[in-house]
Image (cartoon, rainbow, N blue to C red):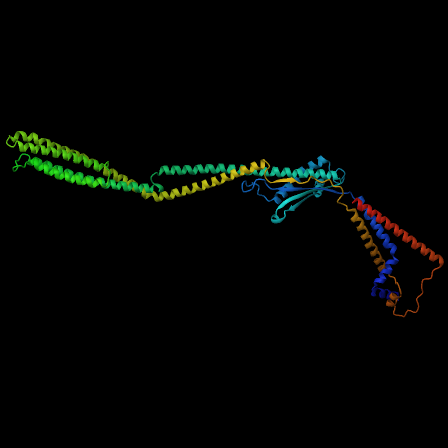
Amino acid sequence: MKVNLMDQIEQNPITIRGWWLRLCHRRRLVVLSVFVSWALFTAAAWLIPAKYRSETLILVEQQRVPEHYVEPNVAIDIQQRLQSMSEQILSRTRLMAIIDKLNLYNLDHGRTDTDSLLEAMRKDISIELVKADGTRANQVAAFRVSYSANSPRIAQQVTAELTSLFIEENLRNRQQISEDTTTFLVSELDVARKNLDLQEQRLREFKSRYVGQLPEQTASNLQILGGLQARLQAATDALHQAQQQRLYLESLLNNYRVLSPQASAPGKTAAATQSVELARRLEQLQAQLNTLSANYTPLHPDIVKLKEEIAATEKLKAAVDAEAARNSSAESVATSVKTAPSDLGPAMQIESQLKANEFELTNRNAEIKNIEQQIDGYQQRLNLAPAREQELAAITRDHEQSRTNYDSLLAKKNQSEMATNLERRQQGEQFRMIDPPSLPQKPYFPKRLAFSFGGLAAGLIFGLSLVVLSEVINPQIFGEQELRAIVAAPLLVSVPSMQSANEKQKRVRTRIIESLATAAMLCVVAVVTLLVYHKS
C-alpha cells in the first residue's frame, strides 16, 4: 500500500501553491544557503589578490612629408609590423630585463623558473588594435598597450616600459629597413653600372670595327656612292674626250707635216688650213665648256681641264695664224730656209699637247680605276648593312635594357636615400603616445560587487535545489487537495493542528527569532554590499 502511495505521489505533479508551501516549510534551509553562499563569495572577493590594469593609447602617426614627394621604404602593413614588433618585445631577453629591473613576481613563490615567469608576464600583457573611422576603416589608427599587476604602481611602470619599447623599436626597425633597402639598391646599382659599361664598350667596339657598314651610315653611303658614280661617269667622259683629243692632235700633226712643204693655191697655205681646223676645234671646246658650266662649278676638274685645253688651242691657233701671215708676206723668198724654222714651232706645240694628252689619259685611267674600287667598297658596305643592322640591333637592345635598368635603379636609389634621410630625421611614420600610462585607482579584478550579487544568486539557486532534492528524497503531502489527488477514497474529515499553550508560545518565539535573524542577515548583506559598492 505504501509503494502504491509513493507511485501516486510521483505521478501527480506538484502545483505552484504546493511548491510555495514546501518552500515556506524549508525556509530556514533556503535563507541559510543564501547567506552562507553570499558570505563565501564576498570573502573570496576580498581574499583573491586584486589585479590592477594600466594602459596607454599609442597613435600611429603618418609621415609628415606627403608620400607623392617621398615614398617610404617601409611598405609592410602596420598590423604585420605590430605583430613582428610584439614578438620581439615579448621575447625572453626583453621581458627578463623588465622583470629584473622592476623585481616583478617576487611574491609569486610558485613561479621560480624563468619559463613560468615569462608565461605569466605574457598573459598579463595585452595589445589591442584600434581601427580608424570613415574611409580608412580598414587601417590601424592606434593601439592600446596594457599590463596587469597586483600593484597599481608596478602596472604603470611596466606599461611605461612597454610603451617606450614599442616607440623605440618602431623607429629602429623603420630606419633599419630603410637603410637595408638603400644598401641593397646601391649594390644593385653598382652591378647595373658595370653591366652598362660593358654594353657601352661592346657598342663602341662594334661601331669602330664596322665603321661605314652601320645602318645609320647607309644614307651617307648611298649619297657617296651616287657621287662616285657621277665622278666615274665624268671621268669616263673625260677619258673619251682625251682619246678624241689624242686622235685629233695626231691627225693635226700628220696633216701639218704633210701640208707644210707644199704650196697651196693663192691666199692659202698649210698654216691657213691648220688655222681653220683649230678654229673649228675651239668652237667644239667652247660648246663643251658651256655644257659643263651649266652643270658644274668653275672649280670642277673637267671645267678646269677644258679651259686649259682651250687656252692651249688658242695659243696654237695664234702661232699658226702668225705663220700664215709670214708665209703670205714672203711668198717669193726662199721657202726652204724659212719654212723649216717657221713650221717647227706649231709642230712642237702639237707634240707637247700629245704628251700632255698621254699624261691625261694615264691619270684618267688611274682615276677611273680608283673610283671603281671605291664604288666596289661602298657597294660592299651597302650589301653588309642588313647583317650589321641585325647585330647592332641585338647589341643596342642589350644596351637599352642595361640603360633602362640602370636608370630605374638610380631613381629608386635616390628615392630610397631620401626616404632613409626622412627616417633618420624622424619625419616618417611614428608611434606617438597620446597619454602617459594611467595609474589605476581601483582593481579591475575581482569585481567584488559582482561577486557579492553572484553569491546571493548562487545561494538562492543552491537553496532551491536543496528544497527540490529534499522533496525527491522524502516526498510529503501538503493540504487536502494534494491528498484528494492521490487517494481515491473520499476525505471524511480534516483534523487541524492541535497545540498547547507552551507549544504556541514556543512557535511564536521561534518565528520572532527567525524574523530577527533574517533581518540581521539582510542588514549585514545590505551594509557589506554598500561598502563594497563604494570601494569599487
